[in-house]
Structure formats: structure tokens, C-alpha cells
Image 1 (cartoon, helix red, strand yellow):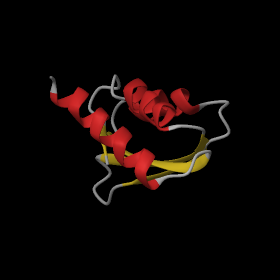
Image 2 (cartoon, rainbow, N blue to C red):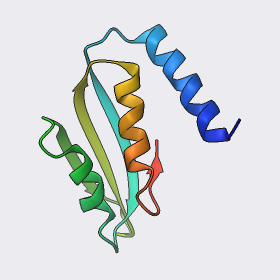
Image 3 (cartoon, rainbow, N blue to C red):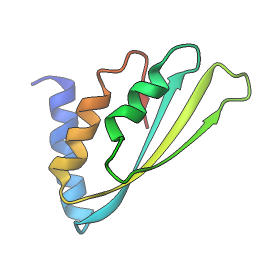
Length: 93
């Protein structure tokens, strides 16, 4: 089993144990500031009712992105993680 698959199985169990859906879920990502990764991440959550906040790092090399979105299941939470993991250089927190 791949590390990512194991991670998502563990995350699903934790979410189902600790979260009552539907619920607001906060995603946090860090992306390099010199590319269009911020735009790519925001496009994944466009037109979904997400509240998106961004902040540049002190050095200006990175942008942190916080996204709050009302979701209906642990599977839906994971589906968004899988969509944004395609973005080059992204770090999920």
C-alpha cells in the first residue's frame, strides 16, 4: 500500500471519528509565490462557497492559503486533497 493511500485511509477514519458532517472544514496549504500555484489551488475551490484567505511569507517566497468549506462527508474532504495534490510544489498542512 502506498504512503498516500495509507494516509487517506487513516485521515478518513479520524474524520469520521471526530467530525459530524455536514461541517465546515479548513484546508491549509503552502505554495511557492513565484508561480501560478495559488491560482491553481483557488480554481479547485471556485464556485463551491469556499472562504479563501492568503498570506505571503516574510521572505515573500511562499504563500499560505487557508480555505474553509462546508462539506458533507469525509470522502468529500479527501477528494479535495486529491485534487490539489496535483499542484506542483504544494505542501498540505
